[in-house]
Length: 106
Image (cartoon, rainbow, N blue to C red; front, side):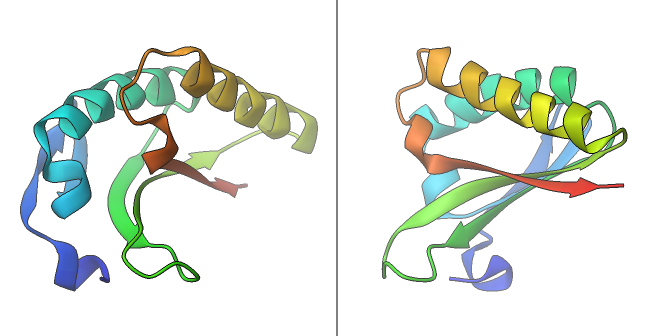
């Protein structure tokens, strides 16, 4: 399912546009998404794109991808990436395995 095929709901969370399909449209996942967006924007201020993508190797498995742009040195970007993953693991999300981070380092 690509972004066009999977789009079943559009809207915003905070100021971030959201295009979600079957995975993120589920109520529990939507609540988790709001929490993940909160700490993502804290760690990576700026634009945030949220979309759903299929796993390229596992048919029928989808993820919610949060795409961010990061300024700073390689070390700073890696440290923020590590912090994001610690926040994800340390949260009490129902389905943390559904979330992926994509960083455009500049």
